[in-house]
Amino acid sequence: MNARRDFLKTLGLATAGYSLVPLLSACGGKTTSDATNDSTTMITSTAPELFFKISLAEWSLHKMLFDKKLDNLDFPAKAKNDFGISAVEYVNQFFADKAKDTSYLSELKKRCDDNGVTSVLIMIDREGEMADLDAKKRNTAVENHYKWVEAAKFLGCHSIRVNCFGVGTEEEVAKAGTDGLRKLSEFAQPLGINVIVENHGGYSSKGTWLTGVISAVGLPNCGILPDFGNFCVRREKGDMWESPCVEEYDRYKGVEEMMPFAKGVSAKAYGFDANGNCIETDYARMLPIVKKAGYTGHIGIEYEGSLPEEEGIRATKALLERVGMIA
Image (cartoon, rainbow, N blue to C red; front, side, top):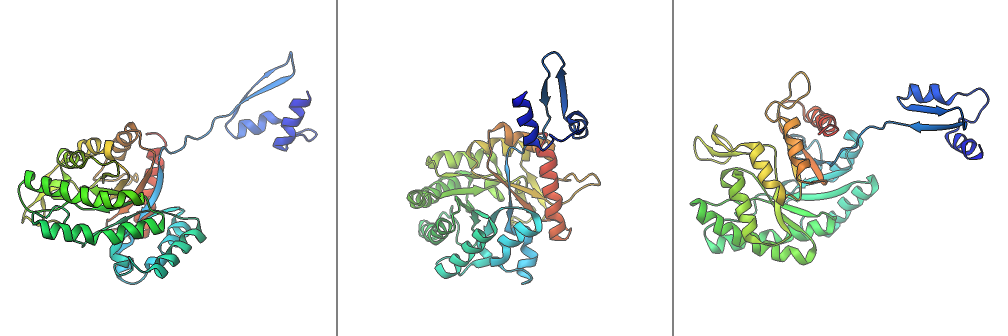
């Protein structure tokens, strides 16, 4: 009896005339009572937890950032205060000249700390092609990424995201990409930073091609950032982004192939139907693929559709939370 009384006091229910059973019933819990020994066994049902953590990719706010309506330094606070997200993924374009500016990076880190926000990774663009067939240009691209590896270390990130682009045959670009990624990963390894490649168009959007390159690099800190979108292998005019896609790799097959090398995941979304489901990607099919691989890290929201950016972010977050609960 004393144990039961202490239990009720802990719940704040040991007051005259207060019934435990109605309260638990109202909360959706179940109780069974054994009148013989006057003990009460309580069975409560709790909501399942997500198998992953949610982060916010800065590109989701790229219009606002390019229009100077948001500053990179304010990104961590916005993620936390406006969307309830405590982890961020930066894009180097929004602080391109600050990679070696320790005062700036210190302020950015302070703002993360002040808001309880974790820095996850930095997405790197416009620093040269990691798979350029010209060895001199490729080495320059590798060296251009060094400062971002160091900035990622300073901010507490675990990775930088790079691209593996080059012009040539699949075999030629794979060989060059293996060389470039290995050199950069060797530089990053002592600093504890991962070098992860996103499927970002061209050969890199072929799951088997990209996993083949990462396998050939053969270093534990070289991996992949599978993106639910970005599976266009060839466009009408041969460009990377602008013209219509004429050859697309199966996104579900691609993510499944990439997941064994995943050190991050990017939840791309463009449009939603009336039920809040992503139009171009079936999240109810995609998230179980991620879960089956044993992944428990961050899934970054990367909204790029026609809705206002903030609305699109909230819609993607709601979808991840809803489907993630049952995946």
